[in-house]
Length: 190
Image (tube, rainbow, N blue to C red; front, side, top):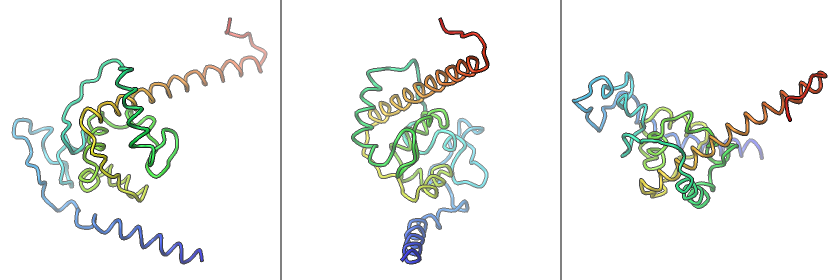
């Protein structure tokens, strides 16, 4: 029975990867490079995307201005995350899709938003998104988000990254304090 299941899983993976076979680096970009900025708009070697698209993703978002965390926007993002994202994502563990805590440290804000707004083309053309498909065997479905909703989700993910960092720093401080006490040193806590 397990051999049949393994063959079925392999067949399903091959079916999902078949559309990518025609998307190799030999094709030409469907979007012409911007003439005004040759350094960042130049095609990335071996890919059919520009250097800007490689860094910022493929989609409508070109630049995102980030300031201090906006609690209200993050709350909107949390509600959207629970409604539209939790079927496939968790913050700290791989589920159907990758764990998302820290994604705002690994990717640019523009990339994160473009992945939310344009997942199909991102998976077809962007090497990092292709790698996610290969790792998780499932293409992220379009959620029909507006740019404002994607921005709210980005703010929620930024908040979660910041909270995770604070928790890790707190845990490291707690661990150092525990080590000092175990070694007979004086406590640094009041």
